[in-house]
Each structure stands twice: as C-alpha cells, then as structure tokens.
Amino acid sequence: MRAIGILAVNEFLDGLRNRWVAAAIILLGATALALLLVGSAPTGTTRAGALDVSVVSLTSLSVYLLPLIALLLSFDALVGEFERGTMLLLLTYPVARWQVVMGKFFGHMMILLAAVAVGYGGAAVITVLFTGNGIEGWQAYVTMMGSSLLLGAVFVALGYLVSVLVRERSTAAGAAIVLWLIFVVLYDLALLGLLLADHEQRINQTLFSTLMLVSPSDTYRLLNLTAFDSVGQVAGIAGVAARSGFGVSLLLGLMATWVVLPLAATMAVFHRREL
Image (tube, rainbow, N blue to C red):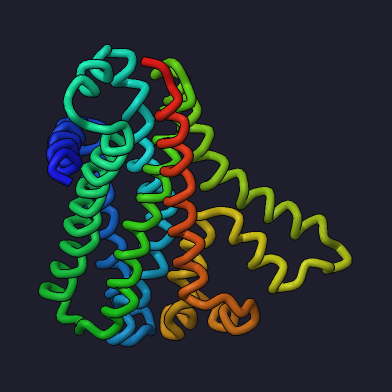
C-alpha cells in the first residue's frame, strides 16, 4: 500500500501540472456555477427545488466533460511511460505491475475528486450563500457528485485499457477520442435513429431503458434522473424508473462493473507485456 500511495501522490501532482486538465477543470467549475445560478433563478420552480433543477443540467454537463477529463488524464498513463523509457526504470523498484496501475488509478481519482469537490461542491456553496436558496434537494445533488466521480472512474479505467493495448502515444490519443465519441455522442445518436426508424413502435420503455444500460454514460443519466422523484419531476421522466424496474443498486453495480473489468483487463495485458 505504501508503494501505491507514493505512485498515487506522484500521479496526482503530475496531473495537476497538465495544462489541458487544469483548463478542463476550471471550465467544469465555471460552467457548473453558471448552471446553478440559472437553476436558482425564479422560473416557476420553487426555491426548494433549485438544487433539483441543477442536478438535471449538471448531469448533462458531466456526461460531456467528465469523461473527457478522465481520458485526458489516463490515455497516456502507460504508453507514455513506455515511450519515455521510464517504465523500465519504474519497475526496477520493488513495485509490482498491478501496483503501478492501481497507483496511477488512485492518483487520477484524487484529481477527479478535487475537480468534482471544487467544481460542483464550490458552485453549490456559492449559490446557496449568495442567492438565498435553501439546501433542499441536497441529497440528490450529493448523489450526483458521487456518481459523477464514478463516471470519471469508468473512463479512467477505459483510458488505461487503451494505453496498455497500443504502442504509440498518438494512437492512444486517437483511440481515446473515438471512445469518447462512441459512448458520449454516437451511441445516443444510434438510439435516437432506432427510435425514429421504429414506425411500428416495437421498442417499449423497458427495452429502450435496457439499451441505455449498454453505455456507462447513459447508465449515469438514468441513475441521476430517476433516483429521486423530485429530480424526475423536473426532468420530465418521473415514471421512467417505475416502468423500467431499474433500481439504484443495479445502476451503481453496472457502473462499478465498468470500472472493475477494464482495470482487470489492463492489469492482465500489462502483466504479459514485454518491456
């Protein structure tokens, strides 16, 4: 655990020095604050529902920005070390390959935790203090923050898998962009096209929700928009959870699986890879 801790702290400090990551985190916080202020404005929603309104908008923000930040952190985590020749040096120390992967993972999760805590947590505190809104709906908001961290973990793990499978950093960058496009943009477009082509309406609510579970981004959406009735009312999908039959435990378990399987695959490939 000491070796993992040292690697995690080193990865955390290296990640904070990445200008693209820093810019993305600043953008995340600034956009979250703007959306919270808009959500707290009088629009017919009661003050008690201000945080619930914000959960809907911040869920969409997270789907686009957090996977991107996670992939920026992780796509060259392993292939970059190979290209620089530092991986061989690193493994001369008494550290196992799985410890390298887990050390990097915990370091990157520390960065994402800081981003979510400062970006979303700070924005919520500023909004509550300076707009006079109460803290009603804080449970849904905290759940959104926790699940956002889990979403980031999914794409960090996927980024590692890409990083260990390719031989060049440029290839890893391209593969990371493709991953982001598939899970964040293209899969949703494919589902929309499927619905538009379904003239006989064979795709019911349960089937459509099941198809959404194929993508971790859509699983994250379902979790945040259906876990609390107040958020479901704001999002206009209050009955989705009841009709689909998907509970919070199932959705969390699926997202956790998206973290564990890529990490396990990364360690298995890394263990067999020659230096």
